[in-house]
Image (cartoon, rainbow, N blue to C red; front, side, top):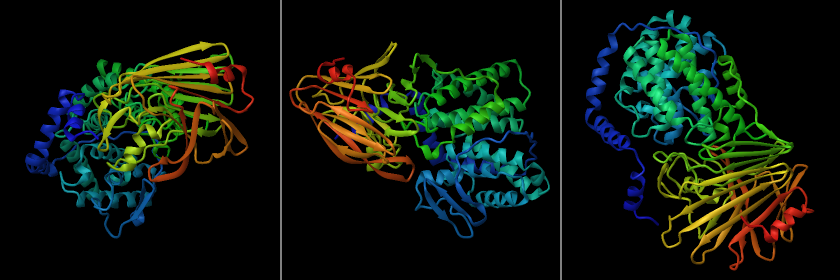
Length: 584
């Protein structure tokens, strides 16, 4: 176990200087200056604000089971119903649950502009304003603050007629949104950067356009230019490499496009608007690539199927705003291949088989909060059925479950001497980590080969290099893992099965059954031992399901593991040869 000092030092060394400095200044503002800031903002309560109302296309949002009439909310699969007033800072609730409560995303689920929709939403907004004085409570943290600002502006524009005929509420909500954005300007999250900073700048642009506040607008656009180049990789992936957060980021871009389409643009803004559209098209193509045939995302990094906006809704939103069509996957005879080299993802497909391989960095060097030890992991589907899966997000509390979900033991990789790919600690921190991976793809008419390696010095007594090869041949694939290491240490190769899979153990095989489809995991029983362990699968927050994990362990005289995944035990000659002689 690492010492606390070691963890801190090897976390801080990767941070940007602005993150360290911002953490200090934000702490000073929050602890010493918060009352002064709040008092200054409070004096704006009688200001006569001028607002510009926009006509927006309905934006998609993940569905939440919310009944505003009875103050009933379900987030993270945890339902809570409040009495007369909502407990906005209820201590028994997790921080993420309260964040969802303060986001107000659920306002966008109001499908019709009816008096009932407006009245219920108005009551909840008034309750928030009256219960959350400026600068106090979780709702004034920059991230939920940023999301709420946008959602309230969206709600205001959607129900403009009703609000203008309700002058007391009109004045109240206009003042509150302004005060919230003014407060945000003191607490921009340079300490976190990544998706948090992007949400901050998006709120500045939305509020700047809404209030015709040139200062907010210019600051938001300045940050947007920089973060667009920083956070979107050349292949269209968001640099945190989480399919879920990629989807969030893409929706943010589309929301910004709506604002740009609704305002007068100078030459500089027109260029940025064009860049936003092109970037959104590339990101849309990336997201479509990272979807399994069941229409849902791969679970790499911090990703949760239940928290994602469905692909169809994002695509519909995209098509209403942008006329640029994402390009299709490149076809290689009967095999389809799509490489996302900057993100490190590689997708192999034949008519009924899909493998998605993670060969990229462990998140962002200076912000690995949503990274997992999943380098060289993969997921595998046949038709719309997932067979081999990553375990999911776990939760965002600094807990045993969070540690397990980020561990190599929740991913389909091999591990030497129980050494992790990174020292994860807390809920979002990372200390020591493996080197950047080296990956290669070889294309052949009848097969595709992924190869990758990385070096690890996390355990200084057992430095090693890990090599993995995955050879895909239309209906089956061969996985070869090898370690270069001085000394001896146990090796384990992990294969996580979807909870709907049944398992039948055979001699040198595991028969995996789901519905009417079955596959076989085949290995050399004379040189490899195996066992079936209990594990978990978390497709959504709060939805932990029991699952199985196959563990393959070579005899001491062997330093590599080879196994075949096939729909038949009568494997091809190439696969059988691979079991005995294949090397990377």
